[in-house]
Image (tube, rainbow, N blue to C red; front, side):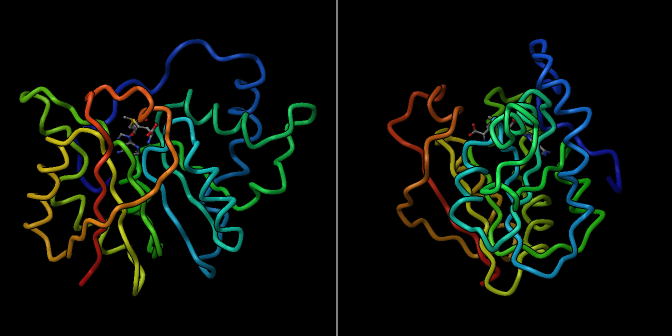
Length: 212
Ligand SMILES: C[S@@+](CC[C@H](N)C(=O)[O-])C[C@H]1O[C@@H](n2cnc3c(N)ncnc32)[C@H](O)[C@@H]1O
């Protein structure tokens, strides 16, 4: 990161991992580094993929694209690795060959690269609902401007959250940028966090941001 960034995520490690997941992190994860790709084909980014349900959906729906996922919570990274590899030999399942994993803060990846994405997904970003934690919210105007620099010509940032107060807060942050917002109805698979519905709202709200 260029400067000391405020930490936007909670724990990096949760409950103890199974032996297989520990092995996957130690021996298989390096092969998924986005540093190994040449920026030629279409790129899609998911930020804070949690356990990776939507990453897998993106991978299958976009077999010709490279899907990069950023997630600093290592139990989530291990859960995704476990779901996309063969249990007997830890080899990548063919349908997920286009997945790359950045197991860290996405801002480090973006500051250090010139990747341009056709889609940038952020589903259920940590809402940090307490007023004293508001500065930890990831989707502030500075971050949105950083994302806008990494969109390709017709690129889109797709944000979804069931925390409607955070949604409105993000809408206000967008007004401090040159991004254009629209609010189409979207059908997106249910992620683990969405199923928890901690905000107890009726449904997630979605917005799409573009560079006009
Ligand atoms: C509330 S969870 C949602 C996870 C997943 N998208 C879902 O819907 O189940 C938010 C995730 O964003 C991740 N996150 C927070 N700050 C991040 C950052 N700076 N870079 C990448 N991921 C981040 C957290 O580690 C956490 O797993």
